[in-house]
Image (cartoon, helix red, strand yellow):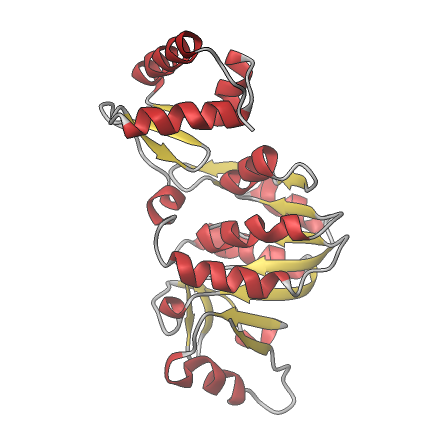
Amino acid sequence: MAETIPHSFAEERRTAIMSMLDRTASVQVAELARTFKVSAGTIRADLDALEADGKLRRTHGGAVSLHKTLTVSIQDKRVNVNVAAKQAIARAAIELVEDGDALLVDSGTTALEFVRMLSQRSGITVITADVTIADFIDESLPAVDAILLGGALRKGHRYTYGPLTMRSLEIIHADKAIICPTAIVSGCGLMTNYAQMAEVKSGMMNAARERIVLADASKLDGQGLFRFASIADVDAVVVDADPDGVLSNEIASLPEASPHPALIVA
């Protein structure tokens, strides 16, 4: 809960926050809390009040200036897209997670909704290349341990990739990998649009005992440039809907000797 701060102190702090935004174009809750020696909840209240006054725009974990040019992350642009579907998927997916699990968690807003549900489990460790997810765990899930994979930062997307990321994955063996493809394409498999992200997703799948795919219905028979896995390579697929049986037909068409993933419709 945010501290009760005298009004003048709050106004001084909010003025200082706006001065910081004038210099840097963006601020983060955790950084502001350390700077002003107050709780994250107090800073969130400050940012909410400043947004209500039309002085800034809130993003996940912080805020951006309305006046200075800034590349907003892809996650921030998509965080309000298909929210109900992503939340339904997350509620279903959490039932596949056990206390004490080590989870490799992919990048993206569906993965973030899944991570929000981890407060329902204990002893969880999340390994991720997604900076937004690591930030959320740091700020909001004190009982969840987080390991952020090193590597090059893909600017604007807030995840790491490259040789350092892949080397880290080679020494990890997690209980489950939570994978969020850009698309699931009939006859092709799990797709993404960025070659090095395809490498990271594949590496996560190889580093886990079980592989769980999360995808809302808009991803089914969508478009993707790089294939990183077959539908037969996963243990479960969690969706909010399966329009026209696209996914169930794809699974049914797999060779009899091939693994058939469980299909869970939230």
